[in-house]
Amino acid sequence: MELIYRSTRNANETATASQAILKGLANEGGLFVPDSIPALDVSLEDLAKMNYQQVAYEVMKLMFTDFTEAELKHCIDSAYDSKFDTPVIAPLVNKAGAYYLELFHGSTIAFKDMALSILPYLLTTSAKKNGVKNEIVILTATSGDTGKAALAGFADVPGTKIIVFYPKHGVSPIQEKQMVTQKGDNTFVVGITGNFDDAQTGVKKMFSDAELAKYMDEKGYQFSSANSINIGRLVPQMVYYVYAYTRLVADGTIKAGDKINVDVPTGNFGNILAAYYAKEMGLPIAKFICASNDNKVLFDFFQTGTYDRNREFILTTSPSMDILISSNLERLIYKIAGNDAEKNSELMKELTTDGVYTITDDMKAKLAEFYGGYATEAETAATIKKVYESDDYIIDTHTAVAATVYEKYVAETGDKTPTVIASTASPYKFTRSVMNAIDPEYDSKTDFELVDELEKLSGVKVPQAIEDIRSAKVLHDTVCDKEDMLAEVKGFLNI
Ligand SMILES: *Cc1c(COP(=O)(O)O)cnc(C)c1O
Image (cartoon, rainbow, N blue to C red; front, top):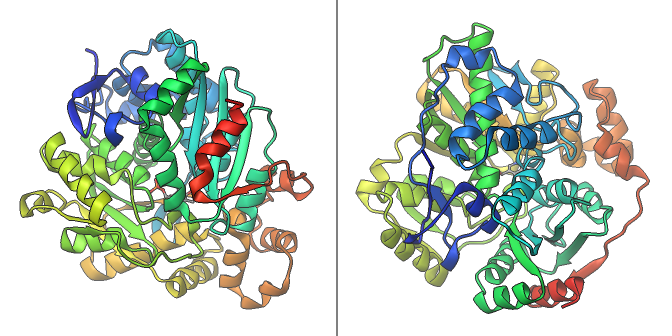
């Protein structure tokens, strides 16, 4: 049966999976959500015997029902190959009382690779299926990691161009270097003088500009999104929760059907929403632990039922979580409003105009599976040091936010349920913050000296992604005001 996707802001706007992937965002700023989430039709025991690619197929076939088996397997096999530095793709390691799901073994050493390595294949396949003749322009706002992962995924993919906007002073030096050294004639990287929310707002504005879309179409282009609002990113992220769970079954830690918790360092709410969707598909998950840094808008939301973005934007050592508008939360709001596009639209309008909305008590009652927590900068650093000293295991700053919140959760609840922590970046991506956490003396060293020190300390070989940028040339040096984003896009496309 064909699964239909529907806009969170207009019940009459529907799409097939491939149409939703192509479009990225629905009209009027809505997000595409599946009408229902089909149940897994293979047992958890059988999934436990499968490899990553096979699990991926079993999950994605249920969500992307208009793809043929051959199309889907082509996408999966093209994505999850030797670009990953381990054949298991997403290793699950038991350290410091939790199960760390290492999602950073892809080409840009952050979890965005898990979805962005497959999105170009899903997108080009979707274009073919829908008879699209236009060239596809991927327009992306990034807080650091999406940008590079999208660039790496789309570079030199025929029929596509990719434009990435990032906050000029809001990403780590290594993140910036990774992006501005990106090769590929179809790539364009622009720093903006603003924060991530400014970049995201600018991109969303271009997406929802109907006149611009018409003009682009005349010129042979159409926009699509690689941001985590695209279901072509969300669905591949469901896979690794099913994979992690079934590894715990395979090694006898749990029996099929036992519950686990998942703990996710959260920014745009995509990763944790994928876990929530995986539960809807039948994965036994008890609690979703939503971990924030000092930008704790989600923590406050789970406490009070009020989402309030009117607050200071704080730059932290976990920049990929420095977000005040968690776009994917809209999909959860829509769900707990009873799949009510009208109610959801009202709330989202309030968010746009006043920067704040409050959900009803009924809606709040449906959030009982979520636990919101946050970690301060000092706590995050202390956790990195502690996990290193206890387990000889070095985690990155984002993962450390989640680990800190997990510790608070256990202290508060006494819950001993086995917990999978989404480990979202390699410590090599945030070397300075990580090394400073272990010993502030390191701060006098250069970035690449620190990389070598980290290798000595961790015993983990320097990843290829880092070696690649040691000597790479800067190929992108455009910086613009947030008001000038559209002009930059037109300039790059020559239209
Ligand atoms: C993007 C990112 C996050 C946040 O993930 P969301 O899906 O946006 O909630 C956390 N950690 C790292 C390293 C990231 O790159």
